Image 1 (cartoon, protein in one colour):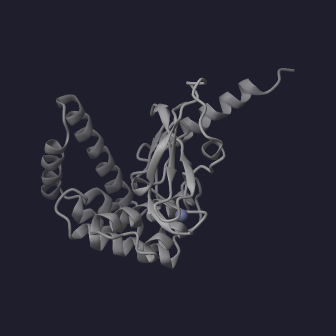
Image 2 (cartoon, helix red, strand yellow):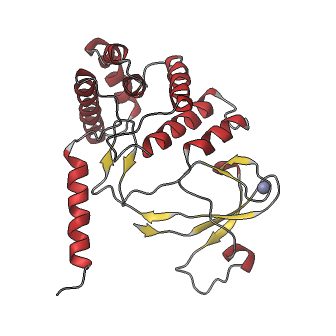
Length: 253
Ligand SMILES: [Zn+2]
């Protein structure tokens, strides 16, 4: 990962200055694709679409912050104002409770925004469970998952995989399987084909989606309701790489 310039912004309500970090480049080598759609791994940039202002306490979408300028560390001749370099960074990882607070504060003004906030809350709840074999969703998490599924069901077509995952994690395996049936699935593929640009991407996309679908069906068959990696061996491989890296870093005897 290569860091890019920091974006300097002002709160639209109280004018407090914050910095938003950026990345000049990143790759998805060693990344893990999870069944809930989270793409995780050390090389993947994280970033939340919202933040709570530490000065006025209000929630905002990052796109609604007022942009003041950039701090570019590769341009040492341009000296940014001290207020910029001292400004705090917006947090990139938010817990489930913060997404719920944003919903309570009315940040989900449209159906699409509410879906985004509820989906982020769902993934944040799963973040606590990804690498464990115990632990379960809280009542509030399950309630959020049901609301999210109901909102997605009102939209056309494209959300079958996510809905199937939510229902699977709720333990409603028969309903999840029904969403993954081949005749419904053909609809998803057609929609996806129109969504993407090049032929190459299109084929990869279709293959990737089939892989997720097959994995969800397999997990439904086992009545497994935990969030899982799409490729079961991916986690072991990543941990193996980390252990190797640590072994290389430790002092030789
Ligand atoms: Zn503010």
